[in-house]
Image (tube, rainbow, N blue to C red; front, side, top):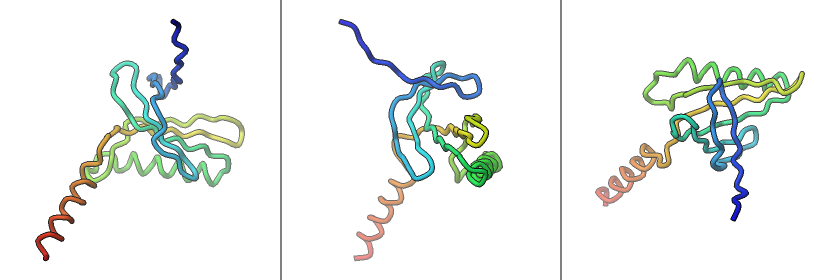
Length: 121
């Protein structure tokens, strides 16, 4: 029996990543789960396709902020990023972040709120 399973691979700054699944999609970007072929670590890949100068400037500003706050313990850190020119007027920005399957701070916030509600009564 032959497996016809094909994975989509992409390269970001000379590192190869396998596409695992789509995590989310928004109005201007989408987020995919990818895995590094070398380390087998999973990452969240945010991709923004910019087709206007305003969109490109906005994505460049976003990248600048990610880099500026790289060592802030309150923000998720940027692992890697790359901008690829698709045509004269469009650029694809890719931001690679560590992947967390569970949002611990959010779960802790819910747990804390539940405890507060319980003890207020």
